[in-house]
Each structure stands twice: as structure tokens, then as C-alpha cells.
Length: 351
Image (cartoon, rainbow, N blue to C red; front, side, top):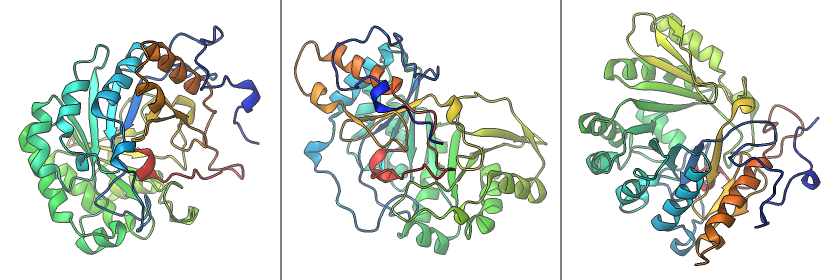
């Protein structure tokens, strides 16, 4: 049975009229408080990862993207409602020119305590120092394999050497902790889990394995899921024993420490151990749509308000965000027959 809220029972997120029934902050009808905002700055990407996007894709026109000023204005309103963490995503966010300027605009916003970036790393070697100077401190770099052939097979492009150079540059610039995100796809992960774990352990990076999810352009094939439990078992046998670490219950990753203290490993078990009941995230797409779930089937346009020039746009935007969060469903349902795959793929939503 689906756990989605009937539309008739949810407030219309497009209505500018304050709803006195809603909490003042970003709380949904299941009591989950939201303080984590994912902001996509572009849908463009210099890879074509099979689990994320199609090979042939039409990208948004530049005029459709939110400006840095519009993004910063949205973040300021969201911060006033309780958002404390912002993560910049894409597409590939470093394809957005002068991204460090946006970082400089967001870091000083009152209430924002944590600004991070998720990147595929291809452009990171040339951008790491300017991003760090702008105030960015946390990086997640996507890297699924250390094998050039499998890298090309998964991403449909070359570039492994550039990703590794980007990681080295980020380390020299002073970023820490640097997390390496690897999507675990059966047929690949069997070969790549151990080399990635050893590489990250040797270089002081935190590796996080993410179960393959139904959010790409391909048809959902559940047998491609390489479960978190299998990943952890492999690492414990081949690298070093793992000890669970007490983690933030709202964080998507469950973290472990090597028994000798030589680093950390995280797993994001979106399929085998969904964490929807503790989710604290909402998303802003590059074209200004608010999404209350990665797998949401509905989204609300914030761009019109951000571009209206109306002095009352701030309170109206706050109400739009509150209503969107309140209408969030209990979970994505992709372990049930009720699951419906979103029209947007990951590159167009933002990680």
C-alpha cells in the first residue's frame, strides 16, 4: 500500500496565503524537520554515467538557470526557516563558470553552518584552491572505479586520471574530510570495492558506497543492486575489520571505522535499508523547482517568485518552501509495486 499523502489533504504549495495549520519551520506531516538543502547549479555534465543520465540529452538554456543571486536569495529564505546545511550539486557543478563566487555568497548567510560540494572531479584540479579560498571546506568526489576501462564503461567518457589529479589537488588545498562517493553496481562493484577502499584508506579519504538506485535513464533493474551488507563484508574480509560509528540519524550514510583506526567507510543503503523515516533533505533544481524528495513526482516553481521583483516575494517564497516540505510523502516506495519512476533523471534533479 502506498504511503503517499492524498493531494486533497496536502496544502497547495503554490498558494501564497500563509497556512496557520503549518509549523513555522520546515517540518513535514510526519514530524521530520528539514535543515539540509541540496542546490543544483546546472544540469550539464562532462560525463554520461549510465546510472544517472542518457547518452544523448538536451540541456537547459542558460536563461532557464537560476542566477547566483537568485540561488543566494533562496538559501537566505531557507536559512530563515531552519536550513543550516547547503550542498551544491549538478549535473557537474564545476561546469558552472565562477562557482567560487556563489560559494562566497552562501557561506556568510546567517544560519548556514555547512556548505559542501559534490563533483565528479574532472575539473577539480584547476578549481580546488579558489573554492577553498572562497570558504568551501567539504567535498564529495564521485569515483566508482580505479580501472580506466570500467571508468569509461560506466561513465561513457575517459577521465580517470583527471579525477585522481583533482583529489590530489583538493587534499593539497586543505579540504577535509574529503569523501569519495562510489555507486555500487553489480557487475562492477565486485571488482572495485576493495581497490577503492584501499586507495581511500591510503590517502586519507572517506569512501562511501551508494547502492544503485532507480533514478537514471535506464530501466530499473533491481538485480544490479550490490547490497551494502555485501560491501561491508568484502571490506571486513579483504581490508580490515569495521566498527560501527554513532552517526547522525538524518544522514544518509551509515559510517564505520577500521578496527585499527586507519580511516572510515560509509554505506548509503537506499534500496536495502531505506532511511526515509529520518530524511531531512529538500532540493532546489537548477531551473528553480523545489523538490521535497529525490524521487518526487511533483515539484513547485520558485523561479517565478525569485524573478518577480515583488517586495513580498520573500514571505511568499518562505510559504512555498514550507508547504512543499509539509506535503512530503512518507517514503519513495521503490521497494513496492507502488513505485513510479520520476520523469527527471539524476543529472536534472541534483544529487
